Length: 134
Length: 134
DNA sequence: ATGCATTGAGTGCAAGTGCATTTAATTCCG
DNA sequence: CGGAATTAAATGCACTTGCACTCAATGCAT
Image 1 (cartoon, protein in one colour):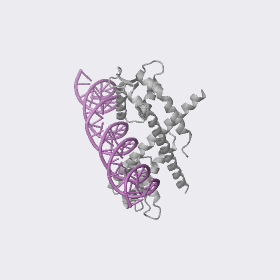
Image 2: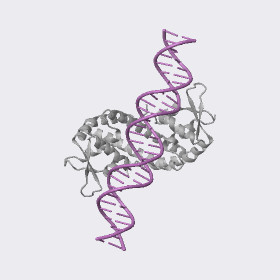
Image 3: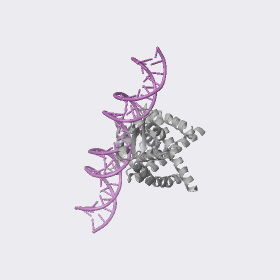
Image 4: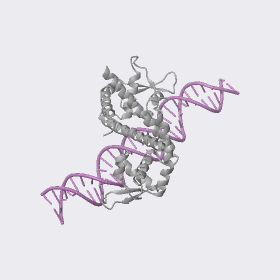
């Protein structure tokens, strides 16, 4: 009986997560799409923008990024391909390990990120404030 | 400054949601896939199994389901098609509104749902218990 | 009753994703 | 040193998904 109740709690918790996730992601996609980005794209740009604080060319390796966004390695590879095609990032060969690839934000990429970040934050504010009840 | 902090909180909260969502969904898919189901499929079966308490043929209309799972109407239409092809549900014409379609679990569907439900609950238990920190 | 807007569901199509595989570079060990 | 095992990233492929559209049935207004 108590077990039944706990189980129902778990299910409710999961449904809540699904709901918040779906609503927020959808809204996020909506807001970013006008700037030619999907939610995943922004996530990657966001990660990249973090790492390049002052030294300018400290770049991430692909799998460093993969560790921070929840995407498969293959999806990430293609995503980076798209970003590159749009001129937002550049792939550079990694001298220490010539299998690796360093990914860097271009100026254009950094600009775009700066432009859309406030938008993204605003959406998070709107969607996460109310817990979804109503 | 305080605004900065609040914003970071939001971002962290969102990252957490993404992480829990990704891990749980992935694990769920993993567990269900052995029984030929994806996470969305199970969600639909779960909804269907709820509605049919005792009267036996009280069925859901497609858009009733769409309201309870976070899928577009078109995705749902195809998903139901797949479930039907696998003999887990049946589509029946709805007499009151001949545009509508009633969806009912078959015996096989109900069986399968009963079989995998404990599995799903177990995964939820495992993944949602720990908040994700380690 | 007739026509027009609306609603429920299915479909063509393009995009993004994961799994399995491939290719290239590196490491490990005999 | 030389070949096997491992690792980084890219690619082929199938599948799911959402958007835009279509088609049928219903409701509404004239």
